[in-house]
Length: 307
Image (tube, rainbow, N blue to C red):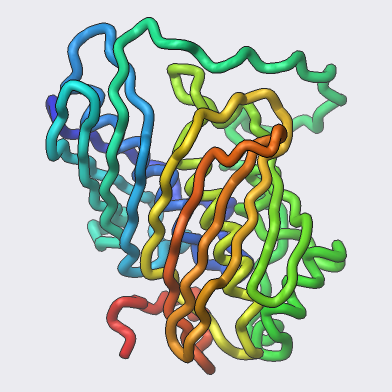
């Protein structure tokens, strides 16, 4: 490593699993954003800070628990006086390429106006005791569906089960405290707390978590359009960050809408609003629909190679 490069890793924990057992693209965005920002930040002079303004990802193949590690390697493209550009590759532990990402960050000199202080949080209820303080090492919670369940139910039927509480949300939703608020064909709405757990060292809300949240809403909206036995693979995700999120513990709300559903491609838009109704981020994404194709957790489909 050195100035202009940055490498970050996260374990390929079962907590990252979607309802299909593969990791959603948003899980890769979590580690990618760190490497992208780091490659810019370690070239800056003293007294400078940065915030992600735009994150763009292209996915080659999904990750699973067999990936062992998600490794993001960021490289500086250019750092000016007000903005910086970087790119990153995201690989598994064996060096297999999973995704490519680019980012634009806004550069600011310290001191800058800090985010509003969070509201006092209520006294925590008694928490269960665990053998490890690291949440990702604890047994994952949430439902990962069998292929038989995907074969026997439409995507909308399965999403409706989650909405009604008849099935538990998958592990990656449980990890971040997501709650489904509404769903219909081509549309889904989720909430998540703007927790201080998701803050950077600057005290700002981490862009990779927002990207993951948007991706989760998008994936749910696409799922509502699937017939029984079908699957899909996310091709790309582009996120624009519009304003800072205050980590005050109140809910953020993501709403995603499928704006085009062809035979093989679905295009979806999504946005996130804070508890005051202010739009803080928006995204677009495209996915390849794979009719009569199982999710193949053991050997995930390399979506970009599909005809």
